[in-house]
Length: 298
Image (cartoon, rainbow, N blue to C red; front, side, top):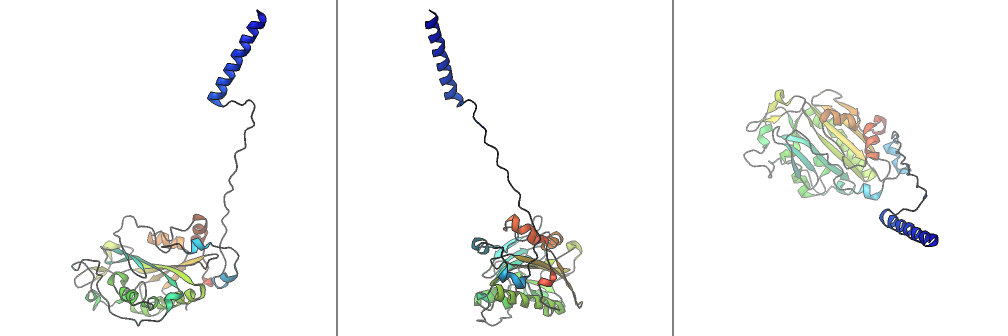
């Protein structure tokens, strides 16, 4: 009787064990694997001169270097913005100020071919309704130049690119001395860097500190006169990237510009530059700069 009862109890225990295993995968005293730790990347200050990038050892992948639209800022919150794509640049046009918020483009060595002459034919943007489009005449007699954001000098390679850079959506009221001197000097330097490194990314535009009380010009359309201009520049060269920002006062002072980090220009303008960059590249890149690495003018 006891043997029979013992067999019955054993059978019941085996049955319960099978059920528990099926339901919960119970395996007895199985060791628990440790949770892997994640090492946070350490950000270091970038201090490799642009002039020495050919010998730097920190590589940027081809996939990163060939990102499309790397130069385009993020959309701006709380400001009029109409994005217009052109052959050689993109503009964020402010339909309330009648000037761009920003204009972004890249300069490649191949695009510096001198195939077409400067047209000097300023025209209203065909993508803006004729009744609302800023016209050449809106700047006449104002005392300000029709200042290019994306310059004609970056568009000699293609007839369409040259024509489109004279659209009034690429233009701001700009002090004459600034336009022909230091603003032009930096444009020339950007082309020199493009020849040296293969590609340069540029974003520039106006700064308006108080739009409600800003100076305006225009015979038919009110065009806001910027207080200043910004320009941020990124050189990648498939290796350690470098970036810097400049702000130019819209006046005829002997040295109207000052250098800034990209982060500082973002804070002043409210624009997020290079948002497609991976954070581990963007953060140190935009926080640091060294003017001695960017020799371009007086």
